[in-house]
Length: 356
Image (tube, rainbow, N blue to C red; front, side, top):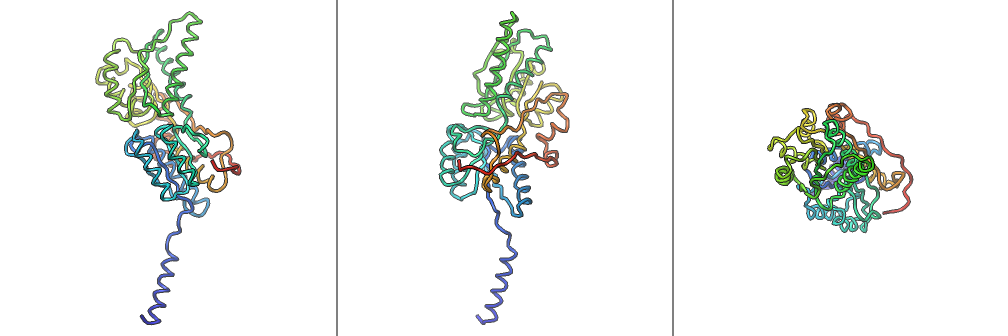
């Protein structure tokens, strides 16, 4: 090759390198429990928005890698995903653990490789490993569900209501907290009634599990309702898929509206059912803010800062009824267009003390 040709190759190569996009300052893997529920899609939108906002602030991009199991309750798939992102050397991980104990080992492997982890949505047993736990106060959400359901039953004249708690799955820390909050609120009301000489609330069932999908919830709900159809007054289903499945079972058996149903989380069918009176209330989380703050917190940690205050940071719990289901503040919790217009308030920061 002539000297002129070599000079041309050098000039072209240098120009191409100058036009190439700059690599992201930070690569963050956001790993949900699953990909299908509306809840996780809001988490995704919030995480992407945080990456965009942080990129504009710093002048360099934050790459958000969205990667989760196709199905909830596929813990092995989630472990493989975490390990894959450890091997590709992401800078940080935002994780919604499928199981509070099973996911400890992969999180420990990440931390041993100097990859910090923020946990969202559902807790991890080894709390000393993580940077922050950003989630709904699920215990309070369960308590609010109990108070709303008991108020609805009281308005219906049910002085000694008979109720069912449909659980989700063993080891899911977030839903176990909801279940405990619901149980404790009902038991506290029964203690008050006993002291006042009033009729007690009766538990018909609180040991059945809906499983990870609407279909598995429907399969569990049908025999449960057939067993108690002439007795049950109210039901609490503790997440989106369990509430969807229970609602379908109530419809199939002609029990909708006669049996009062409280659910947890938003899907368009559930919100429509609240509006038309088939569901008596939902406890909504703020998954958009959760995804946003999870991503924001891990990037701030990588930059040398941490959120002030205790390890747990709550993103809020909201009681949604027919009266407020279409309010702007409600729509901001689940609707993509409304979420995109939100301004997310971020917590105060302090210089971080040490690695988790």
